Length: 433
Image (cartoon, rainbow, N blue to C red; front, side, top):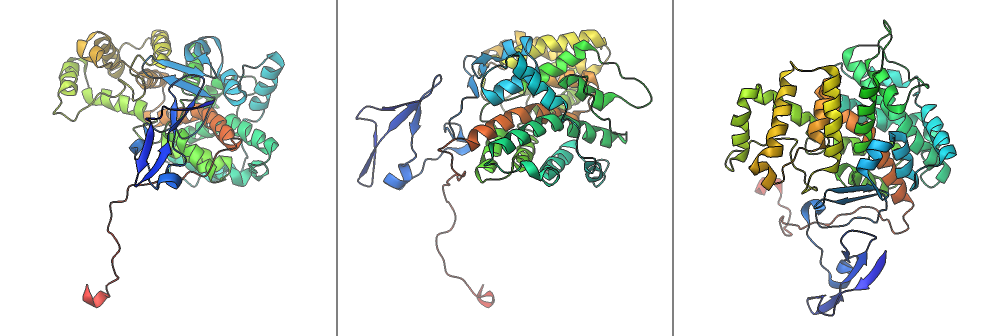
């Protein structure tokens, strides 16, 4: 990171005080204006709702160029990782900065695989939830409670305990998620199997039953692995920022990840692929697609199409390009031709890729559009979609949390505000109000 001064003209003068604006330049992407001393020097704050133009931290994990449709993890393009790597290899990359050599890969995969079981008493925790509880509500509660089951890895100042807690979270989150799913169905929990890959094991824990042997199709397992890779990290989004802010207070890692899950639950964030399926249900039949497309084009109509476009990407979402291929492979394998929702989805995809309105506004199908379709085809109910997102994103959250903890300039998160309430006024006794 370099530190450069802007020209002499780039100064702020306020109430007779003057401050020179310096910039910080990263390895790639736009430079940032350093305003850390703005309040101490001039007594003013900046105003940036949603932090759309504010850099909150320095990070070397993920880079996004939304205009060009670029997503890099530690410098590696997401399409190369999704096509040629595995989820646990990507997890190692996010955590450690480089792709693992063979001995490192074997050690890491073994460490994750042989720690997928959870404390047996955790089963009692699930029984405290109603059967119809949303799986994300269960996830928030159970993950937040992990610190009481694993207190030996909550000291954030101990590098070894941070390593243990990081690996525990990554190893146990699919087990916790699968248990939430099984609990909602009233089916017995499945213990993890050490001879399966990360994605295979998750599918096994979700869909196998004691009465018969579960056969994992390699195409389905590959699609699940790609979904996990494509959702592993996405820079400083809402949930990642939540994890960092929670962690900046010194909270234990399990509490921080629970906070991230709570943030992810929102429909504008992790619930987007669930919203896609609800939208398809609202459309109902293929012959009503034009009606809803026209509603989406109407500026005076509040209806919007979910799964198209992205706040960051103003080009084709690079994750969607990979997911599209996987989506068609899964649908081809399962032979789903009579599912009305999937028929609507495929027709909508054709329109979005060929309609001038969508092309001009760059409303391409995004990763949520395709992942929702795949998960529906696999047999997951819509309320599990965000849970799967959380399973994948836990890796990114853990990597970002570790990076924040070891950042020498990190401080407790404390956003400022533009106060618009009452000025000072005297208290009025009740009888005089």
